[in-house]
Image (cartoon, rainbow over the protein chains, first blue to last red):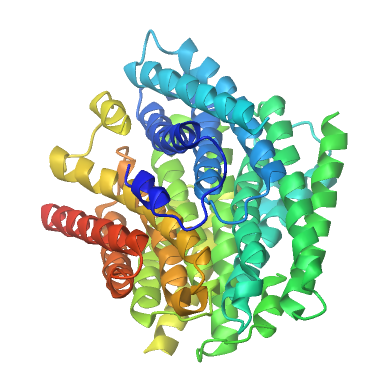
Length: 133
Length: 133
Length: 133
Length: 133
């Protein structure tokens, strides 16, 4: 994503490990889009009534990942307590949403993909948390 | 807000204390709008260079409150672990943003108002956390 | 909403009619929350399969109203061409979503409320468009 | 982005040209992240007072692109009138924001990158509008 180039040109980048930070940003925005799309695909399935919890958690996950992506992207005057709290909440949301998507992975390819992206995003969040300390 | 009436008509409301839940929703959406507006008012001040941290934290707070307001609004099949993590992150963000706004309250009326709204939202989040247990 | 007080304290307010502007902001944020809640209430109904179009349009309307509320709230250095285009898109989204909600108003009280809020928001957007000229 | 794979697995994809649709989705989400980052980089510059209009329009553009990306991603029961209005508003916002970023491109590499991404997103929006007809 082009956001990597903008951060490379930032006048006051944070002191956080650059690779870990950029991976978290990438995964958050990818997971936000993927969960928006999985909620919508579930809504289009004939068995939508069986997928209600999946839709709901994908909507939550899309919102949490989008907000986390924005906050982690910002380099100017960050508050690490805020970053930590928000990234922790994102990791929790991705874990729970990934578990739910996985329950439908055998029947719905979009849920299988979404589960995988949630796992990747959860991992990237946890790596950033480790880097923050 | 009209969202109260929609939740009153919801087919499967959560078991959370209704008053505490609705107050948290109201305060999150009010704080999201107020912080969006305070970030913008700071940007219009002649001393914007002194307000950079305030702008940044107001943008973070607007995003966190908007996402939290959406997630807490949803009543269908909630995951309380997700709700708790997201509301905790919101309370932290409101506390830090409120502290920063307060530092400028004597010079900028919009920061004074914003600080107050952040405090109210932090309190409403903490009350919901107590209700979740 | 407290955003009214922040805008009253803004150092560089736009020249747009204040009452019309504030009504549009209020209605956009109210409609965003209401449509988030109606999408979720529809998802919890036993006849969710009949409400798929309503869920989808409520998600669209919540996103459009939230973004429009943010953009109209900002007073510093606005571009009226951007404001006009975004408010026009919001009015269209509210009209289409309001029509769909109305189709379910007799069976679902939350859809009846949501239809009404969409109408109010559409009207407030059109009044702001008339004020922009 | 992974959203392409989810849409490939969607049970009821829209009839819109797939390549044009996916390019619009990609560019909207890329532009949303890039403008979030450019607004923040401008905020960190010593000459932030000269960049106020750029920050403001980047915030508008990030919000508009994010909402447009979400709405265009949804394939289930779309309303083409809503899609058209929202994509038009996004193209306008990208054009105006791209013009402003370009004014600072010689002094700030992040503005140069952002201007380019806004142009690409504007183009992708216009191609989708042509496909909708």
